[in-house]
Amino acid sequence: MDIEPLRAWLLSLPHVAETMQWGDNLVFWVGDKAIGGKMFALANLSKDGHGVLSFAAGPERYAEFIEIEGVFPAPYLARAHWVAIERYDVFPSTELKEHLRNAHAVVFTKLSKRTKDVLALPAAERRKLIAAKKKLAAKK
Picture 1: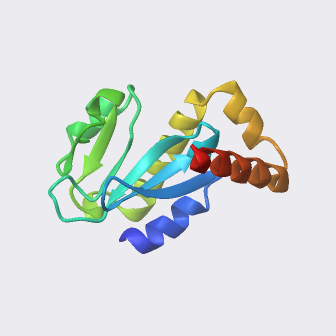
Picture 2: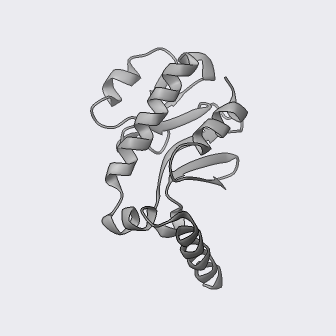
């Protein structure tokens, strides 16, 4: 597996948005960050030694993950119980997807009630609200 099929799969999860941030990092959010969404995965597109993919492991699984060869504490995010993988084949494709589905769920539970309420809106209404928030933020 590499970034393109993984990206398509991540975007198929409920309420996922993506941004390009901090240089060459493709960041995946549960809920758009304009409405208080939180990131749950980060694909590093540069060859800087920080791994190819980082994701939220959660406090329960963090210690277990870092014992696996090819998995290490995610740079800058380890204190929030994130791990990074050196290459995409550290886990079989189905297992990696399960870990990312779990990361999505872990982060979803941490969203504020306000953000969850926005995500519960009908899709058209939610898109309209997100667009308005982004427009307002761009003016600042």
